[in-house]
Length: 352
Image (cartoon, rainbow, N blue to C red; front, side, top):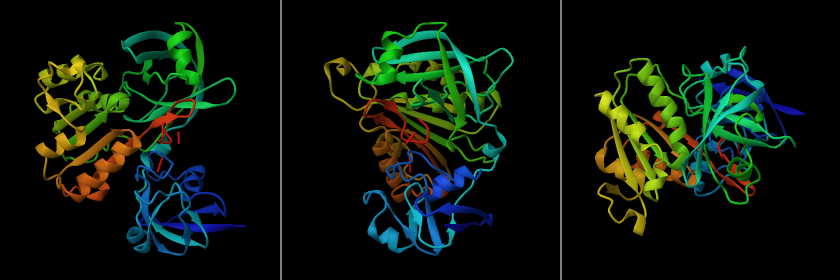
Protein backbone atom coordinates (compact mmCIF):
# COMPACT_ATOMS: atom_id res chain seq x y z
CA UNK A 1 0.00 0.00 0.00
CA UNK A 2 1.19 3.52 -0.78
CA UNK A 3 -0.01 7.09 -0.62
CA UNK A 4 -0.56 9.59 -3.39
CA UNK A 5 1.43 12.81 -2.97
CA UNK A 6 0.46 15.96 -4.87
CA UNK A 7 3.05 18.72 -5.15
CA UNK A 8 1.98 22.36 -5.32
CA UNK A 9 2.22 24.59 -7.24
CA UNK A 10 3.28 22.21 -10.05
CA UNK A 11 0.41 19.71 -9.41
CA UNK A 12 2.80 16.86 -10.11
CA UNK A 13 1.95 13.63 -8.31
CA UNK A 14 3.92 10.62 -7.12
CA UNK A 15 3.39 7.56 -4.93
CA UNK A 16 5.20 7.07 -1.63
CA UNK A 17 5.49 3.79 0.26
CA UNK A 18 4.56 3.64 3.94
CA UNK A 19 8.22 3.47 5.04
CA UNK A 20 9.66 5.60 2.23
CA UNK A 21 10.62 9.23 2.80
CA UNK A 22 8.84 11.75 0.62
CA UNK A 23 12.17 12.85 -0.87
CA UNK A 24 13.24 9.30 -1.74
CA UNK A 25 9.88 8.60 -3.34
CA UNK A 26 9.93 11.82 -5.36
CA UNK A 27 13.49 11.28 -6.61
CA UNK A 28 12.75 7.66 -7.47
CA UNK A 29 9.93 8.86 -9.72
CA UNK A 30 11.88 11.60 -11.43
CA UNK A 31 10.77 14.68 -9.47
CA UNK A 32 13.65 16.89 -8.35
CA UNK A 33 12.71 18.34 -4.97
CA UNK A 34 15.42 20.38 -3.25
CA UNK A 35 17.68 18.54 -0.84
CA UNK A 36 21.11 18.65 0.71
CA UNK A 37 22.35 16.27 3.42
CA UNK A 38 19.39 13.85 3.28
CA UNK A 39 19.85 13.33 7.02
CA UNK A 40 17.54 15.93 8.56
CA UNK A 41 20.34 18.33 9.48
CA UNK A 42 20.74 21.08 6.89
CA UNK A 43 17.07 21.94 6.22
CA UNK A 44 17.48 22.28 2.46
CA UNK A 45 14.53 19.92 1.82
CA UNK A 46 12.12 21.90 3.99
CA UNK A 47 8.60 22.27 2.64
CA UNK A 48 5.00 22.50 3.82
CA UNK A 49 2.30 19.89 4.27
CA UNK A 50 -0.92 21.51 3.06
CA UNK A 51 -3.16 18.49 3.62
CA UNK A 52 -2.70 15.07 5.21
CA UNK A 53 -0.51 13.62 7.95
CA UNK A 54 3.20 12.82 8.08
CA UNK A 55 5.60 11.18 10.49
CA UNK A 56 8.62 13.49 10.91
CA UNK A 57 10.98 10.57 11.49
CA UNK A 58 14.57 11.49 12.36
CA UNK A 59 14.18 15.24 11.65
CA UNK A 60 16.27 17.01 14.26
CA UNK A 61 14.49 19.43 16.58
CA UNK A 62 17.23 22.04 16.07
CA UNK A 63 16.46 22.09 12.34
CA UNK A 64 12.67 21.71 12.54
CA UNK A 65 11.23 23.01 15.81
CA UNK A 66 7.88 22.18 17.40
CA UNK A 67 6.32 25.46 16.25
CA UNK A 68 7.39 24.80 12.66
CA UNK A 69 5.95 21.28 12.78
CA UNK A 70 2.64 22.60 14.10
CA UNK A 71 2.64 25.15 11.27
CA UNK A 72 2.81 22.28 8.77
CA UNK A 73 6.48 22.42 7.84
CA UNK A 74 8.42 19.20 7.27
CA UNK A 75 11.83 17.96 6.19
CA UNK A 76 10.99 15.80 3.21
CA UNK A 77 14.19 13.75 3.55
CA UNK A 78 12.86 12.46 6.88
CA UNK A 79 9.06 12.69 6.63
CA UNK A 80 6.99 9.66 5.66
CA UNK A 81 3.36 9.80 4.60
CA UNK A 82 0.60 8.52 6.89
CA UNK A 83 -2.13 9.46 4.41
CA UNK A 84 -2.49 10.94 0.95
CA UNK A 85 -0.80 14.34 0.99
CA UNK A 86 -0.73 17.72 -0.65
CA UNK A 87 2.67 19.31 -0.13
CA UNK A 88 4.21 22.62 -1.14
CA UNK A 89 7.74 22.47 -2.52
CA UNK A 90 9.97 23.92 -5.17
CA UNK A 91 10.95 21.64 -8.04
CA UNK A 92 14.01 21.79 -10.24
CA UNK A 93 12.90 20.55 -13.62
CA UNK A 94 16.04 21.37 -15.56
CA UNK A 95 18.16 18.71 -13.87
CA UNK A 96 15.64 16.05 -14.85
CA UNK A 97 16.68 16.50 -18.45
CA UNK A 98 20.21 15.35 -17.68
CA UNK A 99 20.74 11.58 -17.76
CA UNK A 100 22.48 9.93 -14.82
CA UNK A 101 25.26 7.66 -16.05
CA UNK A 102 27.63 5.08 -14.62
CA UNK A 103 30.98 5.41 -16.36
CA UNK A 104 34.57 4.21 -16.05
CA UNK A 105 37.15 6.95 -15.52
CA UNK A 106 40.93 7.02 -15.43
CA UNK A 107 42.86 8.98 -12.82
CA UNK A 108 44.54 11.63 -14.95
CA UNK A 109 46.32 13.63 -12.26
CA UNK A 110 46.75 13.79 -8.48
CA UNK A 111 47.81 17.09 -6.91
CA UNK A 112 48.39 17.59 -3.18
CA UNK A 113 46.89 21.07 -2.75
CA UNK A 114 47.23 21.04 1.06
CA UNK A 115 48.46 18.50 3.61
CA UNK A 116 44.95 17.04 3.78
CA UNK A 117 43.44 18.02 0.40
CA UNK A 118 43.99 16.18 -2.88
CA UNK A 119 42.88 17.52 -6.24
CA UNK A 120 41.86 14.52 -8.32
CA UNK A 121 41.37 14.82 -12.08
CA UNK A 122 39.40 12.04 -13.76
CA UNK A 123 39.38 11.47 -17.51
CA UNK A 124 36.27 10.04 -19.15
CA UNK A 125 36.33 7.59 -22.07
CA UNK A 126 37.01 9.36 -25.35
CA UNK A 127 33.46 8.79 -26.56
CA UNK A 128 31.77 10.01 -23.38
CA UNK A 129 31.02 13.32 -21.69
CA UNK A 130 29.21 13.89 -18.43
CA UNK A 131 26.58 16.56 -18.72
CA UNK A 132 25.93 18.29 -15.39
CA UNK A 133 24.84 21.56 -13.86
CA UNK A 134 27.41 23.78 -12.09
CA UNK A 135 27.36 22.81 -8.42
CA UNK A 136 26.30 19.17 -8.81
CA UNK A 137 28.24 16.12 -7.61
CA UNK A 138 29.19 12.59 -8.64
CA UNK A 139 29.54 9.36 -6.69
CA UNK A 140 32.62 7.16 -6.76
CA UNK A 141 31.32 3.57 -6.91
CA UNK A 142 33.69 1.34 -4.96
CA UNK A 143 34.33 -2.33 -5.77
CA UNK A 144 32.17 -3.50 -2.86
CA UNK A 145 29.26 -1.30 -4.00
CA UNK A 146 29.76 1.44 -1.43
CA UNK A 147 29.68 4.98 -2.74
CA UNK A 148 31.51 8.18 -1.90
CA UNK A 149 30.15 11.46 -3.20
CA UNK A 150 32.19 14.52 -4.16
CA UNK A 151 31.25 17.80 -5.77
CA UNK A 152 32.51 18.59 -9.24
CA UNK A 153 34.90 21.53 -9.11
CA UNK A 154 35.15 22.14 -12.85
CA UNK A 155 32.54 24.06 -14.82
CA UNK A 156 30.32 22.04 -17.20
CA UNK A 157 31.97 23.46 -20.31
CA UNK A 158 35.43 22.41 -19.08
CA UNK A 159 34.65 18.70 -19.19
CA UNK A 160 37.75 17.07 -20.65
CA UNK A 161 38.51 16.04 -17.07
CA UNK A 162 36.35 15.98 -13.96
CA UNK A 163 37.98 17.64 -10.96
CA UNK A 164 37.29 16.62 -7.36
CA UNK A 165 38.61 18.21 -4.14
CA UNK A 166 39.03 15.38 -1.62
CA UNK A 167 39.87 15.99 2.03
CA UNK A 168 41.63 13.18 3.87
CA UNK A 169 39.66 11.55 6.68
CA UNK A 170 42.29 9.49 8.56
CA UNK A 171 41.08 5.90 8.70
CA UNK A 172 38.62 6.56 5.91
CA UNK A 173 38.18 3.58 3.61
CA UNK A 174 38.32 5.57 0.38
CA UNK A 175 40.28 8.70 1.30
CA UNK A 176 43.09 6.59 2.76
CA UNK A 177 43.35 5.01 -0.70
CA UNK A 178 43.39 8.42 -2.38
CA UNK A 179 46.24 9.67 -0.19
CA UNK A 180 48.25 6.45 0.11
CA UNK A 181 47.77 4.05 -2.79
CA UNK A 182 45.82 5.66 -5.64
CA UNK A 183 48.01 6.30 -8.67
CA UNK A 184 47.70 8.14 -11.92
CA UNK A 185 46.21 5.90 -14.65
CA UNK A 186 44.26 3.85 -12.08
CA UNK A 187 40.65 3.13 -13.05
CA UNK A 188 37.57 4.10 -11.03
CA UNK A 189 33.83 4.01 -11.65
CA UNK A 190 31.55 7.02 -11.22
CA UNK A 191 27.81 7.62 -11.19
CA UNK A 192 26.17 10.98 -11.74
CA UNK A 193 25.42 13.77 -11.89
CA UNK A 194 23.35 14.23 -8.75
CA UNK A 195 22.05 17.00 -6.54
CA UNK A 196 19.76 20.02 -6.49
CA UNK A 197 22.57 22.44 -5.60
CA UNK A 198 23.29 24.23 -8.85
CA UNK A 199 23.37 27.72 -10.32
CA UNK A 200 19.97 29.27 -11.03
CA UNK A 201 20.74 31.03 -14.27
CA UNK A 202 17.27 32.49 -14.78
CA UNK A 203 17.74 35.06 -11.99
CA UNK A 204 19.40 38.49 -12.39
CA UNK A 205 19.96 38.83 -8.64
CA UNK A 206 23.44 39.34 -7.18
CA UNK A 207 24.90 36.19 -5.64
CA UNK A 208 26.51 35.64 -2.26
CA UNK A 209 28.54 32.40 -2.32
CA UNK A 210 29.81 31.00 0.99
CA UNK A 211 32.16 28.01 1.22
CA UNK A 212 33.73 26.15 4.10
CA UNK A 213 36.88 24.12 3.38
CA UNK A 214 36.43 21.80 0.40
CA UNK A 215 32.94 23.26 0.00
CA UNK A 216 34.86 25.55 -2.33
CA UNK A 217 34.65 22.86 -5.04
CA UNK A 218 31.02 23.42 -6.19
CA UNK A 219 31.36 27.17 -5.65
CA UNK A 220 34.32 27.09 -8.06
CA UNK A 221 32.18 25.26 -10.62
CA UNK A 222 29.40 27.84 -10.29
CA UNK A 223 31.68 30.86 -10.57
CA UNK A 224 33.65 29.52 -13.51
CA UNK A 225 30.44 28.64 -15.33
CA UNK A 226 29.11 32.17 -14.75
CA UNK A 227 32.39 33.58 -16.10
CA UNK A 228 32.16 31.37 -19.19
CA UNK A 229 28.60 32.59 -19.76
CA UNK A 230 29.77 36.23 -19.49
CA UNK A 231 27.40 36.80 -16.59
CA UNK A 232 27.42 40.33 -15.23
CA UNK A 233 25.69 39.37 -11.97
CA UNK A 234 27.65 40.54 -8.92
CA UNK A 235 29.27 37.57 -7.18
CA UNK A 236 30.72 37.87 -3.67
CA UNK A 237 32.64 34.75 -2.66
CA UNK A 238 33.46 34.14 1.03
CA UNK A 239 35.75 31.16 1.65
CA UNK A 240 36.35 30.11 5.23
CA UNK A 241 38.85 27.76 6.84
CA UNK A 242 40.45 27.14 10.20
CA UNK A 243 43.96 27.86 8.93
CA UNK A 244 45.63 29.31 5.86
CA UNK A 245 46.26 25.91 4.27
CA UNK A 246 42.48 25.27 4.20
CA UNK A 247 42.23 27.95 1.48
CA UNK A 248 44.17 25.64 -0.80
CA UNK A 249 43.30 27.31 -4.14
CA UNK A 250 43.21 30.93 -3.08
CA UNK A 251 45.23 32.16 -6.10
CA UNK A 252 42.37 30.89 -8.28
CA UNK A 253 39.87 33.07 -6.39
CA UNK A 254 42.23 36.04 -6.53
CA UNK A 255 42.46 35.64 -10.29
CA UNK A 256 38.66 35.74 -10.65
CA UNK A 257 38.51 39.01 -8.75
CA UNK A 258 41.45 40.52 -10.61
CA UNK A 259 40.01 39.73 -14.04
CA UNK A 260 36.30 40.39 -13.47
CA UNK A 261 34.90 43.57 -11.95
CA UNK A 262 31.69 41.85 -10.84
CA UNK A 263 33.50 39.27 -8.66
CA UNK A 264 34.82 39.91 -5.16
CA UNK A 265 36.55 37.21 -3.05
CA UNK A 266 37.08 37.35 0.73
CA UNK A 267 39.16 34.80 2.68
CA UNK A 268 38.17 34.14 6.30
CA UNK A 269 39.99 32.18 9.03
CA UNK A 270 38.21 30.97 12.14
CA UNK A 271 41.00 29.76 14.44
CA UNK A 272 43.66 31.67 16.35
CA UNK A 273 46.64 29.35 15.81
CA UNK A 274 50.39 29.78 15.40
CA UNK A 275 50.01 29.13 11.68
CA UNK A 276 47.60 32.05 11.45
CA UNK A 277 49.72 34.41 13.55
CA UNK A 278 50.55 36.75 10.68
CA UNK A 279 47.03 36.66 9.23
CA UNK A 280 45.92 40.16 8.22
CA UNK A 281 42.55 39.24 6.74
CA UNK A 282 39.06 38.70 8.12
CA UNK A 283 38.53 36.37 11.08
CA UNK A 284 35.55 34.53 12.55
CA UNK A 285 32.81 32.27 11.24
CA UNK A 286 32.62 32.73 7.50
CA UNK A 287 28.85 33.26 7.31
CA UNK A 288 28.98 35.85 10.11
CA UNK A 289 31.69 37.77 8.28
CA UNK A 290 29.46 37.76 5.19
CA UNK A 291 26.56 39.04 7.31
CA UNK A 292 28.67 41.98 8.47
CA UNK A 293 29.07 43.03 4.85
CA UNK A 294 25.52 42.14 3.77
CA UNK A 295 23.08 42.91 6.61
CA UNK A 296 20.24 43.05 4.07
CA UNK A 297 20.03 40.11 1.65
CA UNK A 298 16.45 40.71 0.57
CA UNK A 299 17.55 41.21 -3.04
CA UNK A 300 20.12 38.39 -3.23
CA UNK A 301 20.50 34.72 -3.99
CA UNK A 302 22.74 32.83 -1.56
CA UNK A 303 24.69 29.63 -2.26
CA UNK A 304 26.30 27.85 0.72
CA UNK A 305 28.43 24.71 0.78
CA UNK A 306 30.01 23.22 3.89
CA UNK A 307 29.23 21.05 6.90
CA UNK A 308 25.60 20.44 7.92
CA UNK A 309 26.09 22.63 10.99
CA UNK A 310 27.45 25.48 8.88
CA UNK A 311 24.62 25.17 6.38
CA UNK A 312 21.97 25.07 9.10
CA UNK A 313 23.23 28.15 10.95
CA UNK A 314 23.78 30.04 7.68
CA UNK A 315 20.22 29.35 6.61
CA UNK A 316 18.85 30.41 9.99
CA UNK A 317 20.84 33.63 10.15
CA UNK A 318 20.62 34.73 6.52
CA UNK A 319 16.85 34.25 6.48
CA UNK A 320 16.12 35.28 10.05
CA UNK A 321 18.48 38.23 10.42
CA UNK A 322 19.36 39.39 6.91
CA UNK A 323 15.88 39.12 5.34
CA UNK A 324 16.95 36.65 2.66
CA UNK A 325 13.85 35.20 0.94
CA UNK A 326 13.59 31.54 1.95
CA UNK A 327 13.39 30.36 -1.64
CA UNK A 328 16.64 32.14 -2.55
CA UNK A 329 18.79 30.03 -0.20
CA UNK A 330 20.55 27.11 -1.91
CA UNK A 331 22.85 24.75 -0.05
CA UNK A 332 24.92 21.61 -0.23
CA UNK A 333 25.83 20.06 3.12
CA UNK A 334 28.39 17.31 3.61
CA UNK A 335 30.16 15.61 6.46
CA UNK A 336 32.55 12.77 7.22
CA UNK A 337 30.90 9.38 7.46
CA UNK A 338 32.11 6.97 10.12
CA UNK A 339 34.58 5.36 7.76
CA UNK A 340 35.17 8.07 5.21
CA UNK A 341 34.45 11.50 3.80
CA UNK A 342 30.91 11.12 2.60
CA UNK A 343 28.70 14.03 1.83
CA UNK A 344 25.67 14.65 3.80
CA UNK A 345 23.96 15.94 0.75
CA UNK A 346 22.73 13.28 -1.36
CA UNK A 347 25.76 14.65 -2.68
CA UNK A 348 28.70 14.57 -1.42
CA UNK A 349 25.31 11.08 0.17
CA UNK A 350 23.47 11.21 3.08
CA UNK A 351 20.95 15.53 3.48
CA UNK A 352 17.86 17.22 4.43
